[in-house]
Length: 317
Image (tube, rainbow, N blue to C red; front, side, top):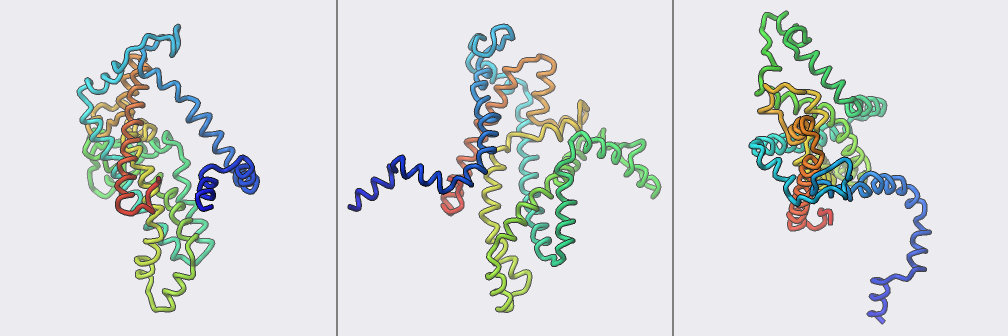
């Protein structure tokens, strides 16, 4: 009898599947737009990955172009810039992930401690706003702040008797500039995510801690932070998968074609874009994108295996 039950659980009948689907029809209907979006824009274009293995010809098309194997992948490895590009891309993403998550959790906890509901709503809206601002507008804002001749900060420094350095000719200053701009844009979004996780907590634990005499810092350390741990780990695993993918819009709009800054600001995407604009070789750019995706996939697998080894409950799968 036990074996029959186990077999039925492993191989449910069509009637059982249909019953489960009908019971959850509302949730399924709510998920359909997201499923359709991912299917159309993420899975349907996947056959186009084949372009990374051909010498693309406009007249013959993707599947009619001659197959060249891994030849397109040698473009990045023989460029002489791979170590620089990997260093910049990985270090920038690590800074974005680590600093960004720390600040997002910090501001989410601060918002949770505020008791004025109107202030919370206003603050969330103001923090969320930069996330929706175009990278083009952000680059114009930064340019009008940092420009040596007429920038706001330059004029402010001169009015105080100082001398503003020429930021657009100083590569060492740009890692800080790019990290600050990225944090300014993304902190609000992450803060709202973590704040939602905090507000969904069981308030009885906080109330019990308060009755036992716990102060604010003790409640944060022993209740709120452990509760946020699963959310932090899941978001970290998702972010670490894109560690070889830079924010092209942000980097390109901030730096443009200013070759003076390339030593500290050039990432894989910007280098490939400039190269492809000269050669129009879409196959090589597709090969680089496929390389980034495959490496990111294995990084996620490795990070997930590490998390699973420490605590299986926090692993993605």
